[in-house]
Length: 373
Image (cartoon, rainbow, N blue to C red):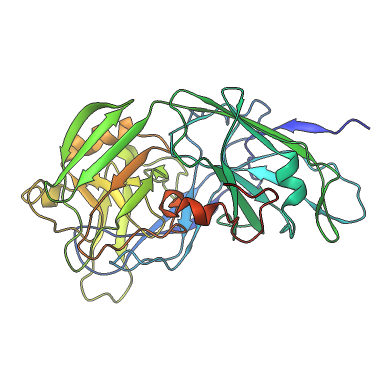
């Protein structure tokens, strides 16, 4: 029988809402900040985009808490993924394949392919040998990395990237004709899946700690220089390459996006320095709570001193501009963001680019089917 293949599409969960508690490092005061967001999944359709969605708007959120140093204590999660319908009647335990990306959507050059599995494969060979990834129709030169799931409800995930960022204005196509193939002893993939998504302009920003300046580029051309205030010596900002994960948050009562890209940041009950701040134009770049956001309370230090609790503070007008400029997958590089050299861990949100290529090509939790040079 000819393999049954489906094009990836967003899943609209049947449940009315999914409640996610997000950890954030609010840069206005000390203590542990908690952001509570109710995420309403999009309605399912067959075209690869959710009703009312825009390209690059795939949702992601986090669950857990963070202290003011940015140390992760939770795991990343996503409430909207792409998936093929389950059709298997195989006697072995079925393994269903889904993707984070939505078919036809647009992401930044730093976005890895994220494949999610309903049951954890124990052998990567069949999947990796069968799956092809192309860039503008040509074979990609990347590698798969298998890790613990960052999305609730899944048991394992595989990430695919090349050694360098994707080419700007390119098309990435992933063909996973895996239905009926082995995922390990007693495990069989229950369907095949294809995914095609677009890469937009190369939005790559670089933050200069010494000059307190973020230089924003698009396709190699400087667009703006934005004064910043990074984390103080006691609450430093992570070094490393960070990827835009999400923008703003959702009102837990109306289940609609809060206006002005707002995220509520507040301390835990009993904190000696309590606060509850609605922070506009917030762009998440780590799971543990680093944002690039407006900081009207810190105007006197932006561009001259590092006084935040780990976030990247911007003047309100600059933060609004950056919020509107950014899409998930855009890159923000922080060379020398702190004196200790503390790097954003690769597992903290989308820290994929902070893992050495030699480690990435080792495959992570599963041995790669074909060793990559």
